[in-house]
Length: 328
Image (tube, rainbow, N blue to C red):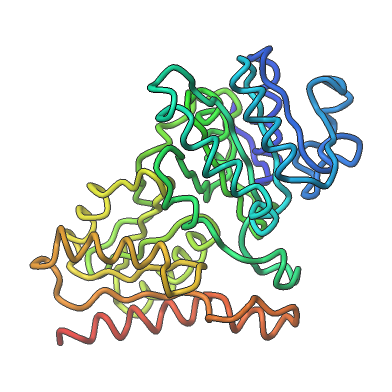
């Protein structure tokens, strides 16, 4: 049944469904139990499923992510919540050197069916230690899958798809999206999580984005339509493996690309996507690939400075207009 729900409610729906259908699944992380989660995504689940399956942990990311890896090795289906992507750096060794490598290092004898959920991104005035977009750090690592749900439906479906995967999956939930409302079908089978999706068709330029940048790209496309520019919006959805086929297909339709990425420009996911376009569709381009990224500073606390540092709709519109003008 379809209903209107917020992004956080969709995450909660996915968590509830995971715990109901998979007896080996459990959720653990900081404040996921009695407090209901730092972003209220697990509110009510402790009362419904009990402390064995909804576990509060100490403030020790390396420890509880490592415990999740051990539980996965032992046959459980752990869902580990890391409060923000910045804090996940304390567990980087566990994720990159253990979860991502153990299948390879064991010659395929072991799998790590682990889901790690992280809040990412800025826009909530949470300052420099809670607001960065480090998705590309994880998208760089073989052995991991990296998902970035940008819609209410994907917030539920990608979590469930991650639970079904035999390898470690990192799910990046943009914190600015949690109150966003959209249509949710709690009974729908999860959509294929590793394919990009065109959210808006167009013929003049491709806006390629993921996570919290997708609504901004869609808003920019709406403004551009009033100026006679039809922008196609491609939601990457999966950051590793990238859906290169979809990326090249949209560029071949529009012959121009503007990449929107809340990561810093240097070493960004946008840089990787740009390189793949240049390698796979160079002769299709009528203008150079453009990138709209965050300013190369720690994300500020003051609202006006934070807004200036992050990609915003006016910057996206301006980048598109420059790109469209390049060829005439």
